[in-house]
Image (tube, rainbow, N blue to C red; front, side, top):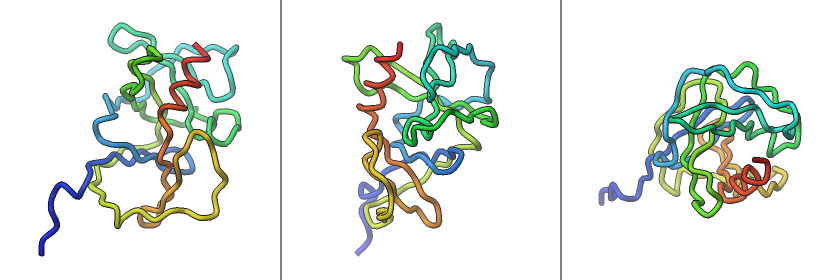
Length: 152
């Protein structure tokens, strides 16, 4: 019996520095070459800067820095991944993440997802999974957006 095409979800696998980020394809608004950002040294350790996109100032955050609690090291990023906000109550329509290569469109089903068992919990992640030989974050976008809204 053939698999039903609806069993597969189109996702984007976004390269971060040490991990990958796995998001539904519809979450991505645009991926662009890394632009010049407006910097603000008064912001927290994961705050990279801001970018003017479609006449709005987008916060740019380093997801790995947010998850791990380390200072951002995003100077080597070569692309900016712009995400649609999912929680309209917070007033965040979009925000951006630096990435370190071209995001890859993949189609996944439940069988392809293998949980990483030896990871530390983070409120910013639902879980970490293996996709082949890669470790990917499945983020908790609500918590991330709530945290961003508190910094604006």
